[in-house]
Length: 324
Image (spheres, rainbow, N blue to C red):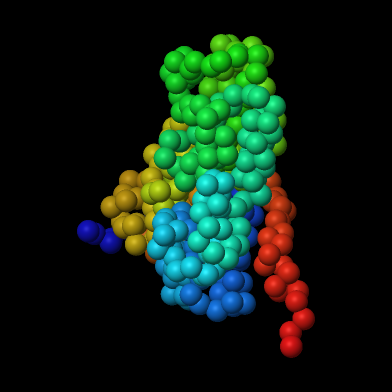
């Protein structure tokens, strides 16, 4: 394709902030890196540690092995549970097979798991708002599968049948925002007035912040590029948020996905990234857009993120143990 975009015809370029890695993703990647340094390769990881092939390939090159099947892992091996979380059944299988485990589950996901167990202990049924088949949702369902109803749409709410509408609680997939869940929560309240809904702080702060940042830039540009993987739920949602603001929006995995034709006739571009996309990919996308005639990037920041999660205790103990 043509690469003839004239540098003289500078397009405005906006960079949304916050974008990219959240605290849970930062922590999960750090856990695998520290495990490789501390224990040495190979280190097994159940599922992709985060939904980004660039991150996964970089860790694979250092000795991480990824699998969705614990049966593939030799007994006695060390396995890291991904940021998305796992069901109690997966933990039990790991224990039966004598696997050593490090839990990289995002603490916000763990909070949802704890709430699921609390509801179940108190004889509540649970409505889980989330995407069917998503690895986080599968892990959450496993904490109270016989009491949980998964809903993805308002239509699902209309078909919902429960034992006791007065003993019903709601949980959400963490990578959904307040906006994502609002319509479904309204429908649930209308059908089940006594339902217990989650507090706003149960929603992932990073998901909401990234969506708000995209909204802040999308209304002022012709095109929004979201850096992220096709299997990243939050990245796909950022595309939808930008489109809802009236902008053309596309998902790109890397700078290689951008050519002159992609921005032909576009006067202004904004860039953001899903929570599992490393900043190096964003920098490469910005550099590529500059090559194609975009002006110096203007960063539009809506909030400062200072959240930091601690390492899991099993890894902290190993790191803090005196060396001989």
